[in-house]
Image 1 (cartoon, rainbow, N blue to C red):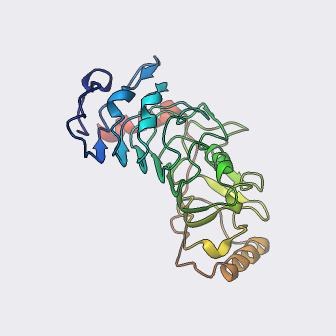
Image 2 (cartoon, one colour; image 1 turned 120 degrees about the vertical axis):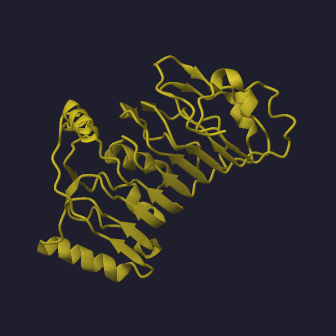
Length: 276
C-alpha cells in the first residue's frame, strides 16, 4: 500500500488487520504529503498486529506514536523512507520494541531543529542504522551513538547528511571532524561505516581514523568529502589504521567534489532553472 495518498489517520481502523493474523510485513510508506505542524496521532491500535516483523511508514513533523505500538514485540525492522520530522527526542520511539534490529530514517525533507543524544536509547539491540539523505548534521547523528558505546553493529550509514541549511558555528556546512565528535563512534565495533558526502574538509589528530576496534571494520566509505591525505600526520594515521584494520575489504575515498555553501533560496532558484 505504499506510494499512494492514503490518509493514515482515517483509513486504518482498529479492526482492519485483524483478519490477517499472519501478517508479517506492512509497507504503507510514501503516502503522507507535506504536512502541517499539528500533532499527528498515528492509529497505533490498528498497527498493533502482533506478528509484524517489518513496518514501513511515513513520519510526520510532530508524531504521536502511541502505546499500541508496544504490541509489536516481533518487530525487527522499522522503516521511515519519507519523513518530515524536526525534533528527534528520547521518547519519540519509546513505544517500539526494544528488540528492534534495524532502523531506517532516510530522506527526511526538513532539517532537524533538535536531536537528543539518547534518541536511539529505546533500541539497545540495534544492528543496522541508516540515516542516509536526511537533513541532519553529522554532529547530531554522531551524538546519538552514545547509546551504543562499546557495542557491536553491522551497519552505520550516515551518508549525505550535509544539508545546505546548515551554516552556523555549531553546525557548519564546511566540517572539520573533532575528537569530541568521534567519542562514541570510536568505541563501536562496526562492520560497515559510511560517512560519505558530509562536507568534511579536515580532521583532528586521533579523530576520524581512530577506532578502539579497527579490526571490526570491513567496509569504510569517505567518498564525496573534501579532505586530503597530504600532510605527514594524516598519512601516518592512515597507515596506522590500515595496519590495524585487518578485516578491511573496502576503503572508498573517491570523488572529491568542489562545493560551495549556497543560500537556500539560491539552491531553489538553481533547481527551477535546471528544469526550465
